Length: 374
Image 1 (tube, rainbow, N blue to C red):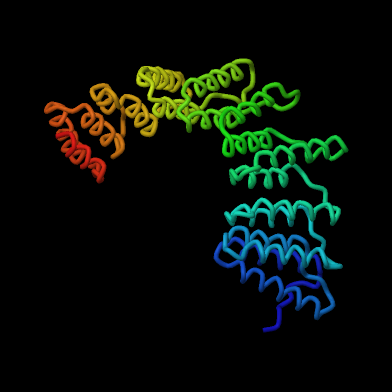
Image 2: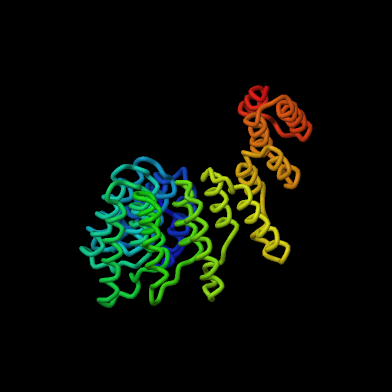
């Protein structure tokens, strides 16, 4: 059918076409149809000697491919970008390149980082000034990969950002997210010590302060290796930073959860006692008005796990917490199974019966713990 023209004004026509593209592009299942519509509009306008598509039109379709997360998303989006680069009527902008990199970030391919840097280099070839958002996108891809050399590559990109900012492009100056991504890269590739070195650089930075994510990322790195001592030390650093006026470093429930996980994995004899102290602090902060610090089922489950060497203490937590789930009961049952003895076996069986009365469905681990208790 012939394209119906709602107005003689070209600008109005472009906006009308883009409004329709927005509808197509918002459906994650229809990026190919969005692209077909773009090409249809482009041909119809060309045949009429007009121009009904612009940079935003292409960007909408590129973003549609990014949202779809299909295998061919990057190739299709990259082809659209190249089409813009070659065009005499439509020029790509920063959002065009950012959209293509978004396709890469969602593809989870082994060579994602290399492809992202290729797109990043294309910016300079076409005189499009970068900002810290697009550099952060590329650093994030390197950071998540954990591949050999990825952290060092993040550091090099960070240096490039500083250099560009010093040359006059303030928009590309690194921000706290940039440093957090570099910190995460070191944590993923190497370990907590290297991650903390980045945190220390942030703490001494003249214009950028670490935020909660900075500290939590470092804490998680220590938690993964069961280093409760250093995890708690970083939590203390976080608390001190907040007390000194860094409002973005406010200790959160997520930070305390990381500390609890570190204690649970540490195997320390005082893990249960230290974990109890942390949860007590959370409860006090919640009662004082900090709603974020309210301990949830996850927090109490980790606390129970910290008491796995003492079934009776673990059971006290079970009855102290509000909503209990299969993990709550199973962890206590396993604690009694490990303890051994007839009384422990009876208590494990009693908890199995009780959880079913509590409308909590046991799983294979629950039944296994109750059986082996005998």
